[in-house]
Image (cartoon, rainbow, N blue to C red; front, side, top):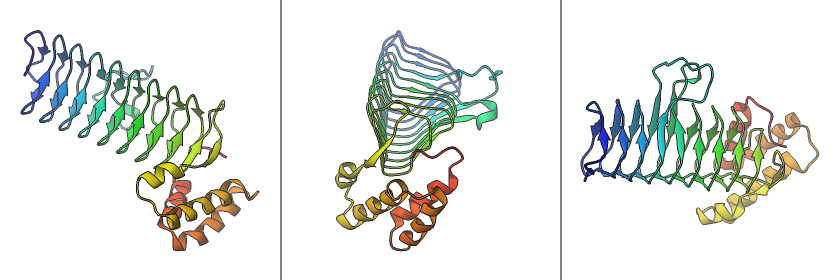
Length: 257
C-alpha cells in the first residue's frame, strides 16, 4: 500500500492500512494514523501527527514551516484529527514558538483545493473550506462553520460555530456563532445561517431564539454593552444565546457589526 517511489523517513510512524501514493515525501517526526490514504506527490513535514481515516489527495503540503519572519526553528507541531478530507494543493503550516506551538485541525473537516491554513490556527469539527479559502495566523474557527470560495480571515480573528462566510468575503473582525457574513469588502453581517441550522436539526424554537439574539445585537440600535445585557436575559431560556454571550466575552478583537 506504499508506492515504491514514495520517500519515507525512518523516524516516521505509519499506522495499519495506510496507503501512500507515488512520489510522496513523508518527513521526520511524522505520525500517520490507521486507514489514512495519501495520494501521489504529497509532502508531509514533521513534527506532524495525523489521525485515522483521513484522505489527503495529490500535491497537498502539510506541516511546512510557518510563514512568519519571527520563526527561528522552534519545535512546533501540526496536529490533524480523524476523517478529514484535504484536497489538492492545500497547505497547512505548523505553529510558531510564541503562538502556542501547534496548528490544530479537528475531525470530519473538508479542506478543498488551494485552501491555506496558516500557523497556530485552531479549527474545530465538521468545518468546510471551499476552494481558495484562506486563514492567516492564529485564527480560530468553530464547529460546523462554512467558508465559501475565495474567502479570507485576518490573523487573530475568531469565527464562531455554525457561522457562514460568503464567497469572496474578507473577515477582519470576530464573527459570532450562527452569523452569516456577506460578500463585501471586509465583510458585513447579513442575518443568521438559518438554512444550515435547519440541516443540522435545529428546531423552530431554537432558530427563533437565535434570530431574536441577532436582532438585539445588530438591528436594535444598541451599543455592544446594552446588547449584551439584553442577551443575558434571553440566554436564560436558550443555550444557543448563552453560547453567543460566551463568544462575546472571549472576543479580544473588534466584533463584526
